[in-house]
Image (cartoon, rainbow, N blue to C red; front, side, top):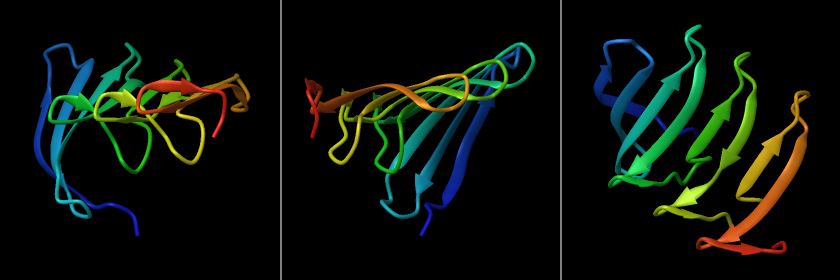
Length: 115
C-alpha cells in the first residue's frame, strides 16, 4: 500500500523556483518535509526529503536530482542524515538513457564494497 500524504503547509518563494511541503505520513505517522527546486522552465531540478531537519526517507530516496528534461540523473537514500540502504545501492547515477551508470553502497554513512 502506497503512503498517503496530508499536506499541512505549502510555500513557494517569490521567484517560484522552490516549493516546501510539510505533511503527515499516514503509514508512519511522522511529520515530514519535502523541498522541491525548479529549473527556470518550471521542470523539477531537485527533491529533498527531511525528518526533523535531517535528510531522511524510509520509502524511497531522500535526494533526487533531475536533468532539464525531467529525467532522473541521481538518487541518494538517507536515514537520519546518513547515506544508508540495506537491500540495494544507496547512491545511484543514471546515464541519459535511464540506465544505472554508477552505484555505491552505504550502511549508516559508511561506504561498503557491496551488500
